[in-house]
Image (cartoon, rainbow, N blue to C red; front, side, top):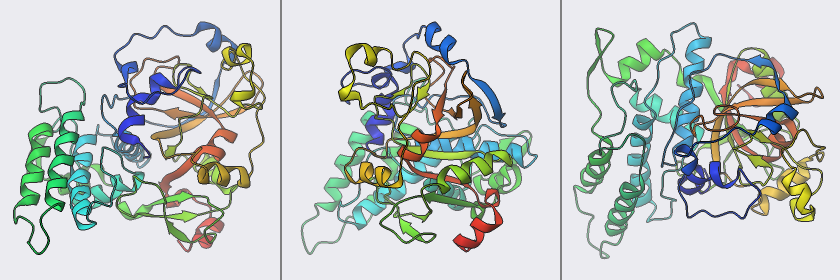
Length: 399
């Protein structure tokens, strides 16, 4: 996602307040003790309506791997929904494989591909299909003496190495072993994944583990977005920098976004969600995101301080507003999370329950409540099981 290698690390702390953005810091929210905002919690008082099966909140640490955490969490929920015992899947196994393929794409495209930790929901499905899966107990990615992910040094070496490869003098072939050397950098930090391993007394390969234990069909998952400048109910390449794999998504009408998600949740399906979290009205600390009726720059100091002290009126978002925000870089591909249910506030207004991967140090122990208008406005894409779609929608999408 967008500046995923930066924003996924920082947004939790930096966007918790109404202060000036700064992307030069790390995700300190994961290491700082958070004192709950008792007044904010008391004024919102959310009541769950739907809360689907999902695994515990994780911490992506100092890495831009939100896309892998959110979509692997989604797959864990899919296991539960399918009647299987969920496994804590190794998010960094997915990321490691994606980083290798991204490096190959970077060289193939002469450097015209965004590097860094970022990715998209479909990357997880693609890596699952091609490489299988590992349990977290077998592959943590913590091969360098830390307790949480810290990819900064590895990322710098990856970029330096790949730039050396693409700067090979004209008319000379690339070094024949560059892929092996590049993979060696990644595995020196993350560890080399096993070809075979034992899980609960049985031996597996990553592919056999995916087939026999995870048991999900990668072809069941589709990714959806909504833009006015592409044909409706057709596929298009998602136009965001971290879509290094040039993955396609289905284009739907503006109102279809929440209709599809609401239907899926009502049928017991969770959703992997990619969105913009750079808004002043997205507060990780308070665990709430909405679209204020008044623009932030037009607010008084008192209104800014009061933004998360209970429910506030919202703008009514339109397809035109959504499109303009994306075209003007006001909506950017920042972060991936999982939609696991719905709730209502004290006024009966609906929200989505969001599971994040920034640890548990916010007002709702790692979760957020997001309004429908925020989701319609700021979603860049979402991924779900195609069986969660209505018959009519599947027909429109030719699924």
